[in-house]
Structure formats: structure tokens, C-alpha cells
Length: 271
Ligand code: NAI
Ligand code: 15L
Image (cartoon, rainbow, N blue to C red; front, side):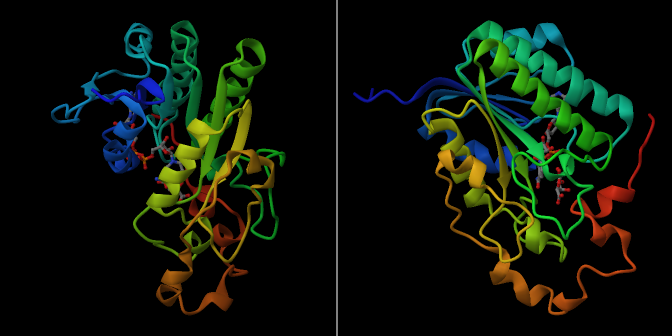
């Protein structure tokens, strides 16, 4: 056993079977004695220092059990794109409420909440935003992320439970569209942003934009400077994928007029 205990006793990752959950999983053991991984299913075998607990965010009892013994949370579980209202309601609204209720009951110190750029997606691409800009969700999914951010605000003001809300842009292996040249977040920068969010001395309720050091800027992270996040990557190394950059945003393409891109004309869906 090491003489130097790790900073957290038990770190919970929700959404551990998802795209970003699978990216994050191998990096978490450095920060916690025990990493608790949760999703609906599909997590394979627990590795050294890992615990697997399947839970539905919408199941209050399961969430109270899931949070027991946890001191920090990376909340990446839930519906991650525009989807049917009931699915969003259960996972992202009822579910995030269960998460905070259970986190408070368990004495969790800090939550890192995977919010989304779709909380502000109906701002035009000509506008630069910071943490205090008004939310302008571009769909029911974006509305659910606004709810999560506000619930986090309430739990900080009322109970002192700290949260960093990461308005993640586009965290994928590389930008898939011209829009993602602006919203791109390299996986290593995501991990660094999470490290900063977990270990900055005081975060209160912080809103940070999850982006790499890209050339075009819609978002200004100066109000999250206390996190100390310094991205090391940029979408510019992928510029050759989109040579006709003068054509963006295109005047005749509604999706390119708004920061949320195609989400501004997707849905709403009713399941
Ligand atoms: P994903 O869809 O691949 O993973 C989400 C995971 O949540 C899935 O494994 C799913 O099974 C789980 N989940 C869904 N409903 C659940 C429920 N009721 N109970 C328990 N687990 C449930 O999404 P991805 O890309 O990994 O994103 C992770 C988080 O980051 C999401 O909250 C998403 O909104 C957010 N985000 C991701 C971005 C990206 O570029 N990948 C951009 C902005 C936000
Ligand atoms: C998101 O919020 C989604 O989770 C992700 O799948 C991407 O669509 C991303 O936003 C984006 O805006 O590129």
C-alpha cells in the first residue's frame, strides 16, 4: 500500500459505458483509492481499484445506494443528444435530481457535471459568450442541461456542495464538421479540464466551456480562470479537413447561424 493516500477515497463516474466514460475510465485510478463505475449496463469486469454498480439514474433508491461512500462525482450519464421528452425527463431531469439528493446525503464534496454547449446553442455564431451569458437552449436536451446547471447552483447555495458545470463542445477523436473546428475538445484536454475541476481549491458553482485551444472562439473561459485549465491541443491541426473555411457560417444554412449547429432544427420529439 502507498504511503501517500490518493486525494479521493471513492470517485464515482456515471455514464461509464458511454463514449466519454470509456475514454475517462483508464485515467481515474490516479485520483482515487476506489473508482466506482456506473451505467445501465455494459461495463465489463471491474479492474484493480474499480467497483461496478449498475443503476438507472431515474431510480431514486438505486441512486441513494450508488452514492453511498462516494466523495466526488463525475456525472457523465444520461441522454446525450436530442431525444424523446420522456427519456430526457427521466434521465436528465429526474435523474440529475436524484444524483444531487443522493450526493448531498452521502456528503459528496464536489461534482463535475457534464453539461453541454446545447445549453447556449441558440446564441448566434457571431456572439462571444462567457459564464454569465444567458442560457439559450437549442432543444429539450439543452433545456435539461440548463436544469442540471441550475440544480447544481441551488445545491451549492443551499448546502455548499460544489460543482463545476462543463459546457462541453464536441469531444470526439477529431472534428467531424466545420462547426466542430470551433467546438472541438481533444480528449486529453477533457481529462485535464476534469483534473482542474476536481483539484482547484475552491470552485463554488463554476461554469466552464469545454474546448481546446481552437482558433475561432465563441466562448471565453476567463470567469473559470480559477480552475487553471490550459488546453494543450487545438482543432487547427485538422484544418485541412475543411479547406473552404470562408463559407462558414453560410448565410443560407440555419444550422450554421447558431452555436448549437444542427441541434437548433432537431426535434422536439415526444416518446
Ligand atoms: P453517451 O451517450 O455515449 O453516454 C451516456 C451514457 O449514459 C450511456 O452509456 C448511457 O447508457 C448512460 N445513460 C443514459 N441514460 C441513463 C440512465 N437513465 N441511467 C443510467 N445511465 C444512463 O454520451 P457521451 O458522448 O459519452 O457524453 C457523456 C456526457 O457528456 C453526456 O452527459 C453528454 O450530454 C455530455 N456531453 C458530451 C459531449 C461530447 O462531445 N461527447 C458534448 C457535450 C456534452
Ligand atoms: C453534445 O452535447 C452531444 O452530447 C455530442 O454528441 C455532440 O453532439 C456535441 O454536443 C456537439 O455539439 O458537437
